[in-house]
Image (cartoon, rainbow, N blue to C red):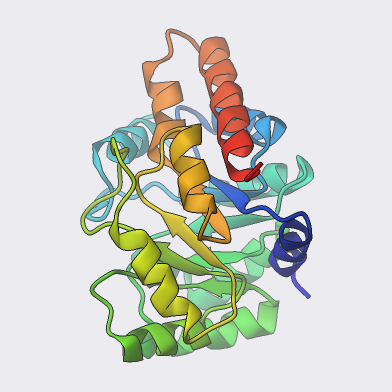
Length: 265
């Protein structure tokens, strides 16, 4: 049983959804990103997604793009992501890397998987890699005991949902809205339907992401999903803060609010 499997066994026993938080490695510096992740975990995040900054983030909205740009401008190197993962795991949360596939392919799939496992990471979220084209990753993840988290969308056919869920481990990532990432005033009305369709083809945990920005929305999503995934709202805490200390406190405070939302009390 992987660390992610253990997490979902615990949250299901507690009768609540898991809270998943995303922050980019190296934003605004590598040391600051580690401090931000630690603050997020202190606030109640159960599982951490560490983003790997990329120069052409076509699936990311303006908030995450701005954070990635800052990280790259500050000299962030992809190899530093493993230091961030190591620190996140040490802070007490299972940790996965969310990355565009080109960065993994450039390093070498087996090398990336081995380094991630050595850092204590639990797996990869691969938004632009589909199971049909993931044979090398399937082999490397099995060899290194890493979870494979693939994405599904409201546009996915029932056949595609079943195939993607079968290939996934840890959890299935359900993107609740069409389009790029970012905060939204309301959670997507498509999310419950997508999760219901997935429930018909898998008993694996389902995490819902894209758009959640406050405790009320987290509570709404936690009513039907196994995990509530929050990214842009946490990144915005750092982007909008006048200094690092204020940003860390904002992240900690938002994480507490989101955690209260997923408790389903």
